Image (cartoon, rainbow over all chains, first blue to last red; front, side, top):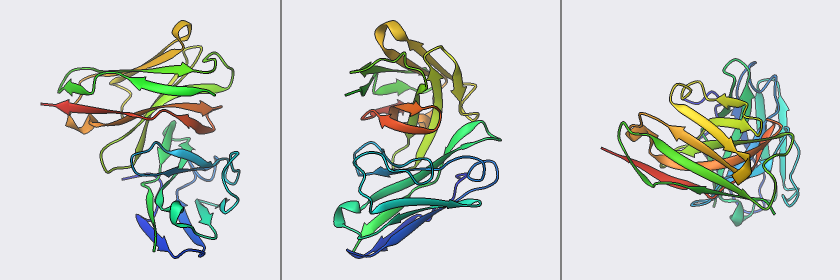
Length: 110
Length: 119
């Protein structure tokens, strides 16, 4: 069972805005910055959002991140078929002295 | 452009030691602020951090694996390595080598290598 909780799946139609939540606690999300990764089938994860809300070069501004209290969220606006992938949140956990990942959310574009 | 490439046996017998190497190309492993490490993903499952190492040799390990894991670095070869001993079927996974900036985020990943533990 993951320290960070994500919904196992979510879906949306093209053009829609979807959000994926990541719930944690005081030892992780509250005290450290959250990162998000995108993983396509058969491929390595790719950094999508770092430091809660920063996009690496090349990531479309349709992707945005936020954090509030013990939770973080990834938002995807103007949903496209190529956004169909698995999404993971990750954060350093102070009490475990360890990186922890959410269980992942499978996004389906209907 | 810096790249990471995992190498090592794809099949390991139960109770033996899993050994993987990651070769860093296109850049220096001796850079301040970068940590090098390993993350694994069991088939159909999520991501699990194994550990990180700084070029100086400073290491951080996942507490749940710490008793079985050793990560080392060879700066002369631009490589870092993973050893996981006493493996079981639960260690069957895709193993990724990674670069972590400042222990803030994993910004670079290898393609991953599948290791299967057989009985």
